[in-house]
Length: 397
Image 1 (cartoon, one colour):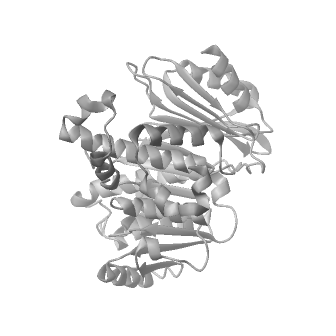
Image 2 (tube, one colour; image 1 turned 135 degrees about the vertical axis):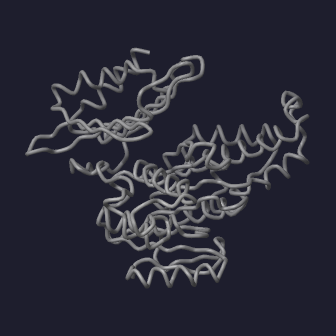
Image 3 (spheres, helix red, strand yellow; image 1 turned 45 degrees about the vertical axis):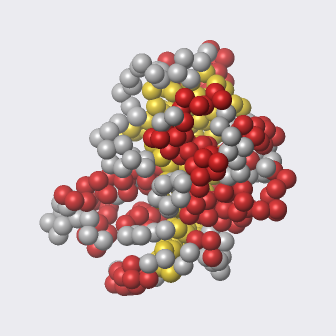
């Protein structure tokens, strides 16, 4: 236990190489005051300090400390029973996950071939979500807020989902994903497009990036309506197109791929596109997952799993879990730093998992390849995403 804490401490306090650290979740049987704590270097009046941002359900609190004083703050965090710790560093990333039995599982990664640029702007964390102050015109325009500044009763959950998504997107992407000009974002299966509009507004108006966002959906009437709304707001870098994910071919390969609640294999279509385009960031929240369940129903059931498959609902959930496990592992094989997290509380939507990935290394890490092949062999299935990627990627799977 002390060994991994020393490693985390050294990575964070290494001024020349530290990029960002995230502490999140509580270990089983413990409660923590904060849902998440983010630590990153900032520059204040010419001095590089460490910024600690503490997030709970209602607010976030930010404090800055010179490096000499920051060691005590880091030790305070390490003394708390966080379940997950991720440190991004140009000396090599470190991932720590504590099991239900309290055992730390530590993964240390080799440094990236190209160092990650560090954003030292000290106020970047302050405007991470759409507040009444910074987004009122947008919230009114898309029907989330009334003219007198209140969030509509039937849009409260949608507003919370959008805010949480933007937090997770920003946390996933880090500053490197927004480098370059312009930043091209594609939102697959955009539907009502509340999220598409929100992402555009956030990146363009709050982070002040040179960004072009495209929403793609098969429903022509929705797309026409969204085009009219974007034109009315004068958002000339927000566009919408009618089409299927698998058939979509942009003029410029997107930096960021989004796909929230794309049904069944549509999620795989979006992941395949992102992998083939080598997009920097891929974020999806899967919806129903039937394709692998169909394969499982015809494949020999491992004898150890027969008690699970006696129950229809457990069989269905097992199919969901395996589908997303295969997806996450394949993304890791392709060089994406990937995690699976809870998008919003379960009372907002039953489909509340999110797969977040950022391209950090070349494809083909033997560890992930072995894990994937072992899992596929055990269940005797072939995930749809592998089928989509085809022969060009067969050597990895």
